[in-house]
Amino acid sequence: MNLLRSLSAPVLGIVALLLFWTLLSRLPDTSLPGPMRTWEASKLYVLHPLTKRGENDQGILLFAMSSLELVAKGYALSMIVAIPLGFAIGLSPFFNGLVDPVIQLFRPVSPLAWLPLGLVVFQRSMPAAVFTIALCAMWPTVVNISVGVRSVPQEYMNVARVLKLPAWKTFVTILLPATLPNMFAGFRLSFGIAWLAIVAAEMLTGSPGLGGFLWQEYNALAYEHIILCIFAIGLMGLLLDRLMGVLEAGIRAGIDRR
Image (cartoon, rainbow, N blue to C red; front, side, top):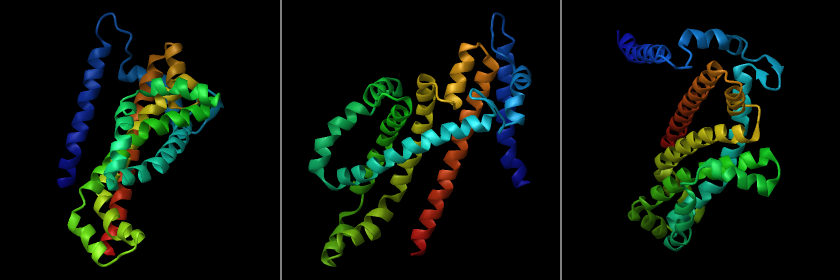
């Protein structure tokens, strides 16, 4: 019974979405395809998700894997910079005052603005896309880690000084566990932004992923495939966020056991 109740709300939500979509598709003077028309036009990509018929004619999973590879590169680069930067800002008021204006200046900038600059600097589309994703994704992690570090009770740090703990041990036993919730909140927000930026990056660079496929089908006026890409991007983002949540729970459980 509990399982039935937990499933009823999501099922009702999906049914309501499909009904609303169907009503929109039946409005006069609209080119929006309905659910059945979208399925008929897109089922080849769904039922054969790993089939490659051409560079821009592949199964939906192959497109998703190409996008995920590009996101992983940009996200990894952003974390390499964001994690130490966030701790440095949280630990040093002077450093915080030094870099905060730069963060506030660049944080709101759209991926569509960074990508042309990346193309000018790197002269190639793939490094430019990785640069754009990394630059857009890093800020939530930087901000959340710095806030987490500043929220660590001063008493904990005083105990570490009294015990004369080495810096690395203070970090492992005090700072890291205390900032872990903020850190993973930043990780998840950053990954969401990286996944959003992939569409802009692939659309402008022509990379063979979900964003590139979406742009190609828009130019071909294949609206059914555009909707397929939207659902694929949303579903992949949801699955990745859930995986990040499972990873967070596992790491926190491991730290608690220590």
